[in-house]
Length: 344
Image (cartoon, rainbow, N blue to C red; front, side, top):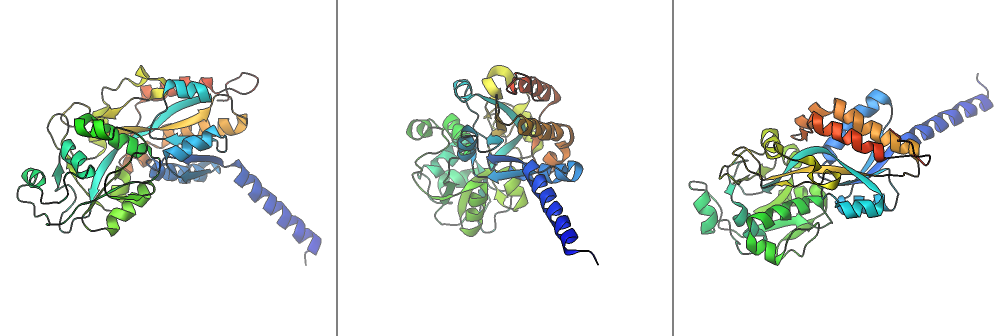
């Protein structure tokens, strides 16, 4: 029989190993938009390398605050920071994947992709100017589709959200009244409806509330089997919200036209372009307090660029083009240890 002291030593060593493994995990927080793909990447990365990712899906606003406070190894945001803010906070910003924001509805009998909306109609629904599904402006777009004589419940993000910034940026581009009255931001004063926290909260609320409409990242609509609406794009077409349409929206993007790759992909031209397409972004410190953790963070995303494309595509995210990944690797040279050497 093994001695008690031997068993205690083995137990202590096991606990220390588990603690060390946990300590090795990189930490991130922020956008809910990319949470499904980051989860898949983290699962695959742990199987391959033994290293993990602890990611808190708390919204872009929370992610920005946590990276500014240096409580995580990286922050995540769907609303890219502008150059002056990046410089002020000493941050490097880069995109990971592209995806689409889709209107989702809970209308009895209406199947996914059957309801059609235009941008100005969607804006007026969220402004409380169109209140019923049988409003003539909606029925005119949907000849033959049976819609209920009921009030519409718009569902919005209650937290500071990059998804909201993407959504309201689009509404501001297609509706001058919306632009004047509400504008585009991560949080706004919604005139009607009810809120849900995160893409998860909006998804759950739309599923629970009959005749509701919400806006979520396309992966949430797909995974939760939500009925989505088609949106008329700039070319007057109604493309399906899939990776082909998201890629079409990003086809002519000039990624270096804004600091930190912070370009807008909403309301892009092209027959196949989904009108509410966006990239999602990572924030890391130029001079991190822990160089090893910073290096581990960049190693994770480097692995994702090289090995995560299929996992991303399976969730209807669009991987970045190779030339953009090359630009990102150049940007990473600005992340340096205290002795001035790049950490990656």
